[in-house]
Image (cartoon, rainbow, N blue to C red; front, side, top):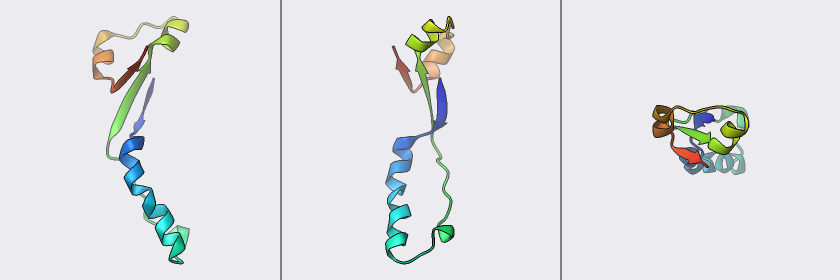
Amino acid sequence: MSYGGSITDALPHGWRLHRPDSQGEKPSDLPVQQSTKTELFINLKTAKALGLTIPPSLLQRADQVIE
């Protein structure tokens, strides 16, 4: 399982990290941004290999289930 900030949510903001550098701004002056969207991924193949049973209620909440 993996639970964390959404990569697809963060990608549109990535250009901000490169643009100021070309304008002569210091990296330490860049604002810190935190993702506002989180995602839950569950890998059932790995869970099965480890002998784990994932409850159906957790599977329903997952953003992506890898079989």
